[in-house]
Length: 143
Image 1 (cartoon, rainbow, N blue to C red):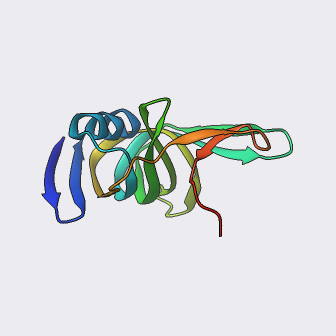
Image 2: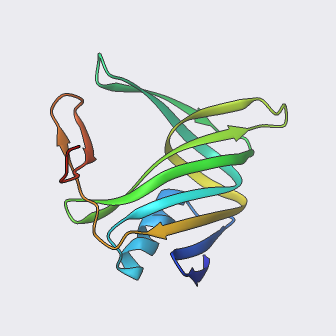
């Protein structure tokens, strides 16, 4: 992993063989920030994607083993029980250039991964939402 500080956070480059979730949450922990947003692109392999069904509160999961363009990753970094968590959705495409998208469970960098992280001034925590069964951002203000 390589990185550079920016006025609002960091630019991070993951290298071949690095797993996205493990690498970005480790970076968050080492740099001691409590949350932020993340965008990225690159090339990945061993991708695990999901689609959440609210009625069953279950994910359909699919695995993609080939090499894919990471066309777009968008998400956030937050804390669950004090531990860093990456919540991201992605669009990937293979050599046929057909888009595949979903909730990202796992992906390993195949060539490079370039990520912009905008760091929050305050920690962002997640708490269990009884309606969905998911740990959602626990934001203090209503509108």
